Image (cartoon, rainbow, N blue to C red):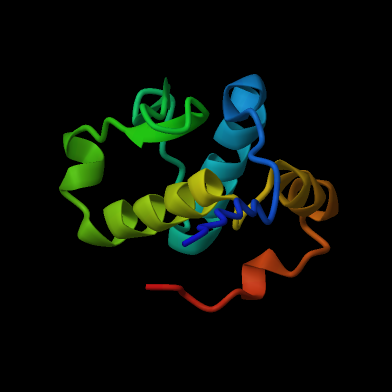
Amino acid sequence: MNITIIHETPYEMENLSENKELINTYLNLIIQQQFNMEIDLTDEYTFIENLVSRKPIIATTFSDKILSDPEIKMFLTSIITEINTGSCTIQSIKTKLRNYPESGWSSLRRII
């Protein structure tokens, strides 16, 4: 019996830690747009290495200001998961930021 293992990677994971400033700007902007408030997210997450893939990922380190608001916590967790999995790429973040405010973000429906 022969077993063939095929490893397919649909995309190359990006080095998130090289784009810390860009990601921080993006997260701050979408929080401002979704919740109409400004929150300093600087200490609300950190970049770590995934133990299995050895790729950098974003890990949440939410403080009480985020944990006390379930909507913001759920929203940020969702966005960070999209970034970690590659569903939201660095290129798409750059495009969204470049096209802001023309992108119509102010008319986005609430996700939560």
